[in-house]
Length: 149
Image 1 (spheres, one colour):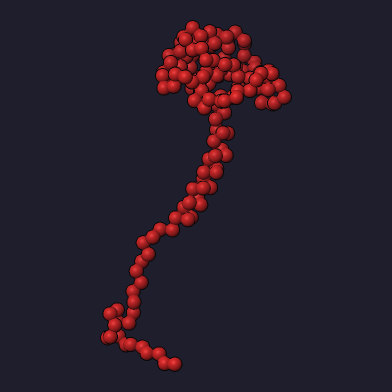
Image 2 (cartoon, rainbow, N blue to C red):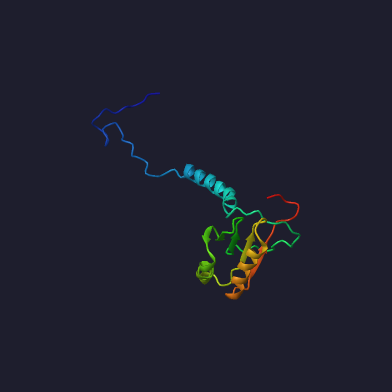
């Protein structure tokens, strides 16, 4: 068994071949990172939609079968402050702000959350404002009797 070796002058590369750089990107680590981030966001997203901290009264009411993700939530906090989603508003600007929000989705439902310690009249005042402004799809939100805040 003999092996022939050429010395420098006979070949095209002069005996030493240059390796070309690989221009392909290995996307496997990037896909792994993206999948981990996706799982993290899927787990934490429902926890981030709590809104204003309101101690809801308990009542035996039917559960919302098809919760509307585009629903507008109006909260009345224990101190009497009114919120649309997480934005504080007063009685004078409540209807105007709500009309602006509802222009984007006129079929959206309105959920009213009243704190357990707030005066019943304050919640009814908000419902009265909604009704007199033409918003008829409003519902009161409570928590089941067995659940704790």
